[in-house]
Image (tube, rainbow over all chains, first blue to last red; front, side, top):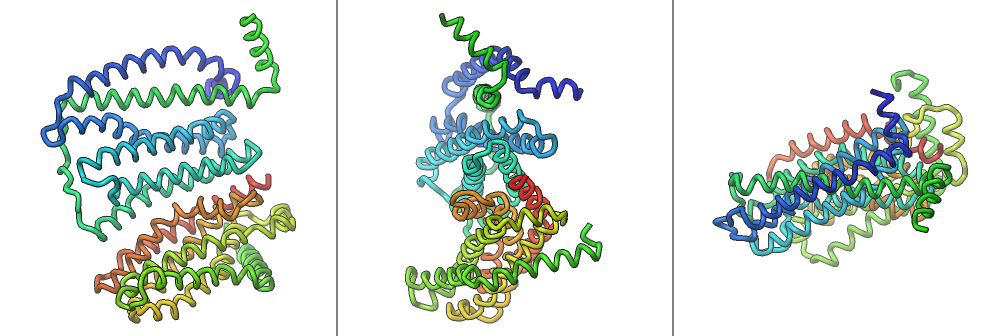
Length: 250
Length: 228
């Protein structure tokens, strides 16, 4: 078990292993995204209250889920960085932080676009919106700290500590914001009481979420792989790789 | 680990050293406190000089001013120790870093939290707050500022010795202070409108307990990372 772990967490092995993995992932991703887009845009019936504008949830909801999931992935990397000092985890942490920030931003922007026709306003100090905004700043904090420290390994360790403080804080922020929201203002926005979603709407949403996860994994792999090349640029295997790819071009 | 009497005296020595050092360089002590008063004074100019208006916002205003002033004070926490090499000497001396982290937080609270709480009394009265709400405000500030010192110390330790560390610390720390701000400000405004502020105070106390148990570890590993 540990042997396997060490094998794949070595940068070189991971580089060549992921090279084989990517085409397979892309194939599954393309199949899923085409099916989900068809389901989301064509086969799912229009909502009886919101009409066609409900379809933005097929981007909004997966983005919002991914924004949390990526933070959890960062947390796992952070533990590996601090406890086992895994180099691959250091690279992963800095590679996926911007992706998570973008997912959070996407969730906020799509929520805002949906909110304009539905709630009549671009922004509402709703509990979930607000805690998503705080999450964005937690991501930006991790990125800022990574950028501020010149030494990459120290930067990754410092960002890991910040990320773990953030993990403890996310539920606290979420529930305190909910508490604040319920006390300060009554529900000015009439929410649909626990919307029971139609099965034809739900299945594309779930497949879309899986497609988003695959997209995240693929993009992360690309970012991690190029970071590995930079990280290991002095080693022989990277030099060999570069000379062999040059030879192919000639 | 900290129950050992030897560790208690180490903790005391570390705190005393920090407090005395800042006390003698009085500018570091003064800036956050001046900042707190000035920010509070700005609000009547921006909102309205009428006590009725100010009174309803008083809790929130003082909480925001205190939060900002505490965040500003965090930069000085490790700065001089880092540039003079004292921090490295402390780390090399074999003192448990857990104690160093805790001592820094306590010193920060004594140097900026405590003066802010004391100054909040005249400021709150000038904003027209009644005595019961004032007592709740002070209680919430006490609990909250201690939590802020603890979390802030970890974040200050992470950005030790970086360029423009002061701004970075504020940007990194403020999102973590949001729950404290919520419970602190809601407790005060509840007491003003006649609601019972107990629940919020318990939440603040809970956050403090959580911070006391977790943040010294974060601070210790941050110091180790930044100096190792």
